[in-house]
Image 1: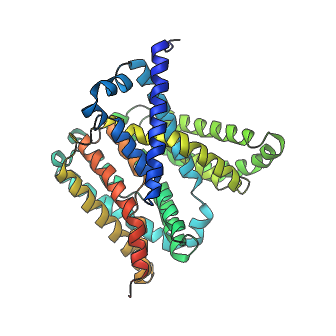
Image 2: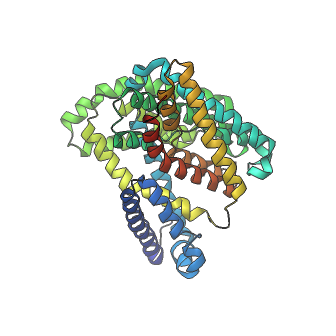
Image 3: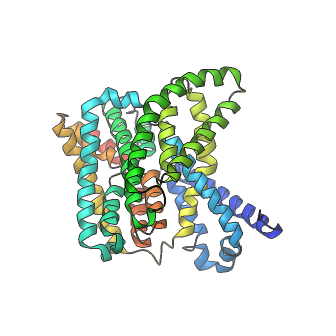
Length: 411
């Protein structure tokens, strides 16, 4: 078994230390300006990556991130684990009883807020693939991906915004949260299928077996799997050291589910997300246990992933104002109007539909994860990925003030 040598170990430790320190500094700065931590962590990655450090201090950048190939492979392992854990805690936030309580209204808003961006995004990308930067050799799949990418709602971000505005437990807040949860589940299911259909996603069991097993896995985990978790968790809480036993077994379950979906040809993150939904919906997983998982992952592993985005992309040389403009305009307008019209079709008053439209337009970590996977699989180019990241940042930063403004509308 090949191992890292003395210099490579030092290099890996310096990479992790610099990433965690700078991510924490910029996450705290983001909080000072009432912005999500993810915004600060992405900026930290831009500073450490080829955009800033690579341009102004190329020697330092080369030493940290380019001098040792084996170190970078080891670091990529950290990034892969980070993104799996990030999707796991995203799944923990999906509370199925909230989705059921909002019923038809949430379903209308969620589906409409996805359908309009997917259709519009597909049409734009398919008509102008070279301008937008989608893979022309995988044109249908890549165009569908772009539509899906601009249809995702940032569940964690919108939940935090609604809490800050004291709207989380209101009818509008619960409607937005339920809609965002439905979008998350549908979005990752659709993306998993898209990836299995792409030329780059050919590893696995074949397209139709993969799709069938994905649907079966989702159904089983959210029914039988959830029931088994409910039976086992009380025993774990009682017999094993708390919270160590619960945490270790929860993460083991996460990795097992992730490895299964990776094996059948669906990205590992889907398995982590679905097991997170099944586990998080259990009445025996206490809020304290969830909080420990969130703190552990959000403050150690999530920063590693979000900083790694800036390490992979040069935001100056890869920036294309035309592409960024199209992504922002199409992404924001179609998502807002999709959710708004969905609310009106469900019989929701105009003012509440406007609030829902703005809330559902919030982006966050999940669409960035999705975009990075598409970039790594060759579905999109670097400028389009940069456009998706900028869309997520703008939507996240503007959602709070816009929801506050919409609540005071006289309509």
